[in-house]
Length: 125
Image (cartoon, rainbow, N blue to C red; front, side, top):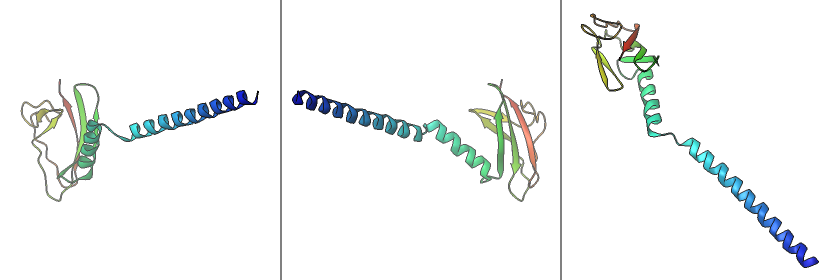
């Protein structure tokens, strides 16, 4: 009878160790998988940081896409001189400010005095 209990104890120990290793493997894989962002997420994050930081003359502190064809954002002049942007590029679509524009600045240019902030709405549809 002693031989059977040793075999049962050995099998139980093996199953417990196997279960612990399996749980640790699942936890490790899930933690590693969640730390790696996809390339598009990294690009989007880098773009947000760039435009919010004021590295360029125009800072974009806020932006929102209301649906597939409508986009709104705030533009702010982050330099000491006036700035007149001529347009933007949204998802590969060039949108010009001024005559024939599909932005909220239809038929007028956008002028930003130093430190001035304006809301721009664009209909890409």
